[in-house]
Figure 1: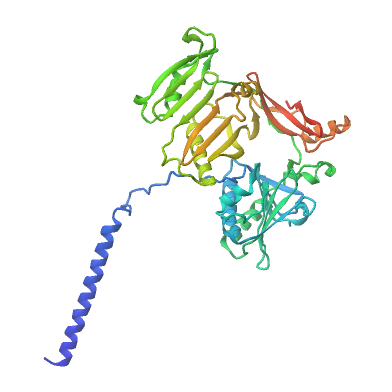
Figure 2: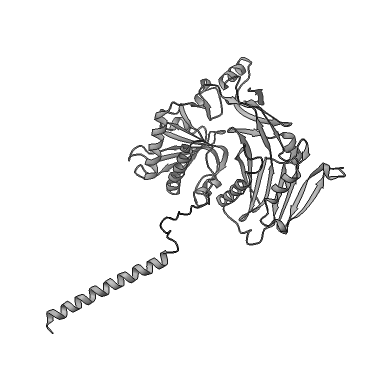
Length: 461
């Protein structure tokens, strides 16, 4: 056999061998990927897990014309969710390496240091440095101690600039300033593009409070430029009372919704003080070996769960908040959560537990619950969630059934109310704000007026 023929045979052998190896690898990959790759025509499964942020904004304001004129992005549109998500992406990118410095109110006024192109996230409640570190997985002592309720984000406008973020305490005026990031990152350019598109196409509708009413207000925040708003009166009652009598079937159905296996649950009626029959029942106890639910006909719910040692394993603050919000989200669909939304008021530690206090909101405005009911139940907030380890160990809620009348135009704008106060010699710390107050089963809309001596209230409609 000649050398040429032998060379051809070897070449054919190696080509065939290589093809066999490639085919074998393809077959192996198909076997292992078959379980995770959807077949043609089958829909992809979407994750049902929702991430919640401790510093999720309630309102977002944009400006490209300076610090005086701002545009409010309504929370019912997708623009707010998009901007909030992009802002968090940018903060997660820059905060671990940003230069952070704290300033007192007299050292650095926020309306003097920020340029025109800015996005402001109004949290409507105060967050702490501990929560800021938890949100962005920052080490201890990475952020100076302090609290904030607004985040002013200034994207970089050129390659020569950094991203600037100010965490502002509107009550004290103190600022926590972080500088970092880069213009060329996708996160910076995406949010800058959206700010420019939104804020250039719609007229501003809010003022920075320090520039409103001749700069006479001491507090900081945003106020509507002009125009009447509308509001509504209404009523508020327990969803478990029908013509003043307990709705046993509804109470039983709701109480049982907290248990995975209803067959394991025992039920016991408790009566009002001095009552002798179930016609005047105050409510139910539902319990099994792990969970106890106390549900009163006046709408007061207390949920308590006994945890195993494994369930008590500690979690971080942001994980605990996710657990609390997930629990609320599952519960709010029935009953009393249909019209009211909720907003975080306070976060605190109690030993190894995290305690989250929430308020109700109606039409985007704070709904102050009936003070008599709050005193009677000794609840500091209408919704309180205690997280221990990986579970909710206590959940307390005042359930409400809300009914609203037809909206009515407000009697006065905040500017007209402020003018009236000025004529009467009343000093204001901040512009009048709208708030719903519940009292003895009725809901009223008021202008809340903050003065050095305390709060005044005037009917809004």
